Amino acid sequence: MHNQLDRLIWRRHRRLFLVIGGVTLLGCFMSTILSLHTLPSSATQLVSGNIQKWDMYSESYFSGYPYWLLAAYWIVGLLLMNQDLKDNFNQFLFSSGFSRRRVYWSKIKVAMGALLVIAILTIALEYGMVWAMKPADVGFHLAWPGVLTSWIVGWLTSIGLFSLTWFAALIVGQTGALIVTIVGFTLSLVGSSTISVNILRESGITLNAEQNTWFMAGSWLVAASILFVWGAALYNHLSLEHNGEYLLFPKLKVPVYIVFVVYVTSLSVWGTDGWSLVFWFLASTIFGYCWLWRPRLGEMFHRWRSRRG
Amino acid sequence: MTLQVTQLCKQINGRTIIEDISFQWAPGEIIGLVGRNGVGKTTLFRTMMNQYVADAGQVTVDGHDIVTTPAEQRRIFFLDVQYNFLDNYRLWELPEFYGDVYPQFDHQRYLTLLAQFKLDKNSQYRRLSKGMRALTNMILALTSNATYIILDEPFDGLDVIVRENIATMVIDEIADQEKGFLISSHDLNELDGLSDRVLLLKDTHLAHDYNLEDVRAKAKKLQLVFKDKQIPTVLKEHSQLIRVSGRVLVVVITDYTPAIDQQLKALQPVLFEELPLTLEDLFRANLAHDTGYQLMK
Image (cartoon, rainbow over the protein chains, first blue to last red):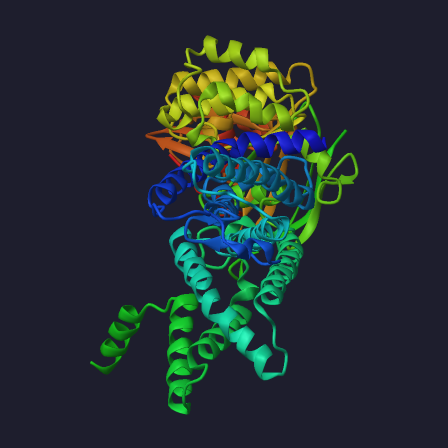
């Protein structure tokens, strides 16, 4: 029965995996071609000495882990969960005789398998193209520290991004609002990672670039584990009458509101004065309320006016 | 072998939709579920199938709770007419999904029935007409070979030919007593001649569970003309007036006893004719007042 469920999930999402795989390979192909064509004629080495460090290697003409893969994981996490909700495949899954717990982990397993194949093919394509198409007089010398770090850290970051969009798509029931929410949150991560490094530094923990890279990778792993396990618990209680609502779990409304206000306020006021704190707190409180509760302001205004009149 | 629904409750946005629903269903039975539009028939099905998480109660198949033993769900077939995933698939692709879920799915019969009803297997489900979709749903239900088949308003908006096809398929399928059907409808005429038992859903509760054979055995529908223009007392006391046209009375007597028969014949009616009793007549006689059931004509 395990295989039947995996086959069912694969059948359902194979087109998605093929499209995402195709786009990722195409994107990687195009960007590698572009990098090789912009290589200055004076260049003698494609890869700098930084490849010897236990750090992610990403420089102008070559990156150890193609960034297209980050996007692929991010999108697959989002679509895998959202499509089943939007296309009513959840109705079928929940009546299919497979436990929800098994459905949830099977979806993750199938997605991880497909994405791993995409990752291997994309990395092989990038490395193969660079090796085969670089000018004859330009050296392409790799070293395990940079390559392994790029692969491991890149892969963990990808899984982290997958878990973010996967979890968001599990709790948010409106596709448009989901995209706005998750794009906003993903972009905000750039700021929050800088802030967390600063917080560490201020608390006396100074990390060099390599340590910082591995710290981030570890953080992604922990975050992904929490989100996957928490998601499994929520998925077990997903009741489809909330389809089409912003939050599929009404009990999460208040916690999400609190987290939103605290996160947006702290992210926006970092390193600024007290007035900014007041402004951002009020702005996020009002915006969060309107976003989550969607009050019908026009209707409220007309009701208020008719009462006055 | 039975499917048992026990004290099932579901609230949506703080409003109780179904409450304390209990009934038993065995293979070989065709049960009609009737109730007004919006009374919660589809919510009951969705809750039974664990698409909506029940607030209380359980559904068991041969004593196994389908939430704790989900494999038992494979003995129940329910295709949500409003929310299903079939739109983007071609008809030949559907058995791939259903075959993974229903171990007894009959792929060959599925293709045969598609051909029999002139449904092109290369058509996309969303491009089918309403009637074609209803037929496809029915074919999927039958070929799943699930023991318990739930059909939600299967006749809604269909022409008479498609309705007859579907009704015939249900009757043919029940012959070997290995399958049971639970068919919801807000139109009693659709269920007439099809159901053995009718459950009436009203105000979130299961108001009645009728065995139609028992009810029909006791009831009679009569067309009467009396010399006198007055409606006789025996009719006033024991019958439900269905129609009055001039001096012609059409009545349903739900508990027709020899005593009533004697009293009526003693009145020497000008016309005394027994008419075929329909489900609608029975409901008009039994339930029109005490349940507020409105006939959807």
